[in-house]
Image 1: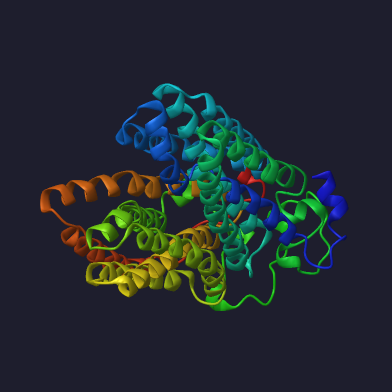
Image 2 (image 1 turned 180 degrees about the vertical axis):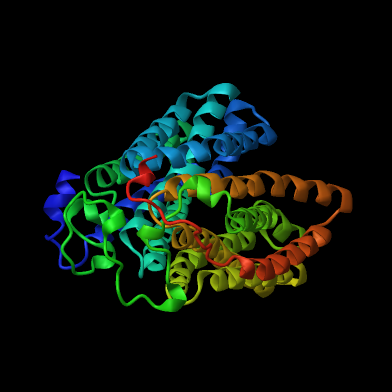
Length: 441
């Protein structure tokens, strides 16, 4: 915080973008235990340790279960102690967990270390970084969060490439050590020294608006920013919601259901997409290129979705995302050749970007900045339930039907239904004003 105060006037642009860049390093680092990284390493792990692929993949499920329990706790920690200590401790734990995998020669130790990394992947990294961005930006909130997940998508590409190159040349143990050291080198210092919780803490205002602010001044008395387009107008701080108020609103639970359905569909397709491409006759190299394409599109798409959410009502952006999800799934069903597969993969990348950016923006816009960590932490439970159950149900239906047509059709119906339901997720209306200082309770 002290360094942030000294640097606030050093740059020719708003210091909030430095905070976004520093937070982005954490989202970049969270990709170390991503499924794409494990996909590259699952064969050498199986060969070297003699474990089945099912046993290895179970570590992902273990991480999802742990994240389900810990997500609300992480949200509470962010609001209670601040995002910065949570981000710093998370990347320290992630780096140590990745390095320790080099010596994980029994399933229990592998599960503990990898699941710990997946908890950071699911909870503290995305919730903490997007919460910080939402507190520093209001009018440009979507763009700020879009930048964060752009860097995260790049991280997915980089860690996958590093894992494949290092394991081929130096072996599995060295790969885990290199990945862990990358996490520590890239993200610890920026998140520790450059992140400030709120612009008001160092005498600034959200979006870099010009006005006198006393550092540490209670947010509830900060004047409303001017010039916000009505179409993208978020809830301001004097109308921030406490967690107890949020859970009593129908809008909150509708957003939880949207998150569940979005990731129920999206994670299922992501897990099974590579196998499906092979089933319809695509070669191994072409299938890998198609999957990689989705990462590249996701990186660019993060900026596009951020730009969109700053210019239209965010529930409309959410509606469009579900429509793209339905179209991308239809493209998968109808894909009969390489071009169709690549189109479906590109649209999948568009949805990947939207599913990161749009929910992060809508929670902040609707419920304000003060208790955003707690509210996001609880809301993320729906996402995690979708991620945990979708791929399993898709796998069961594949085994029974002998193909993916039925489950893909179900996914299309779910996405189209949600594209209509999400339009009902209007900004909740407070019945009583938030009292000054009540956010501390």
